[in-house]
Amino acid sequence: MTAHPELQGASDEDGAPFFSERRRRMQRVVVWVGIVVLVLPGVLVAAGVAQSTANRTCAAYVGYLKPDAAGYAAPFELFGAGGPGWQCYSVSSSGPHTLVGPLGLIPSAPRPREGVAT
Image (cartoon, rainbow, N blue to C red; front, side):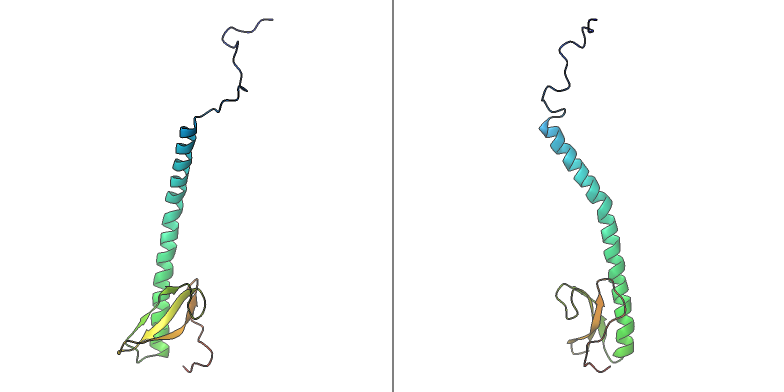
């Protein structure tokens, strides 16, 4: 039995890559861009929700625990007093910030520091 003339000399195992290195590099770039485009909006939404939750929680607790405070601040700190996470501060009219308590990585009710009278 003879092979068809179109198939003579064709081999799938000739050792050459199916796609060029440039095409594979471009495919990798497109895949990474796609992953970032899919993940980044979720991260930004989660950060925005956490920021607004921290602000509202801190405002409620500062209003309850320090009614004479001029304001509040709820920044995210990696090396805060209660560890990494959102920290709740009351702001006096003269400017100094007083720690009310840490809100945690996922903002929740603050845990007052030991020895602090409320």
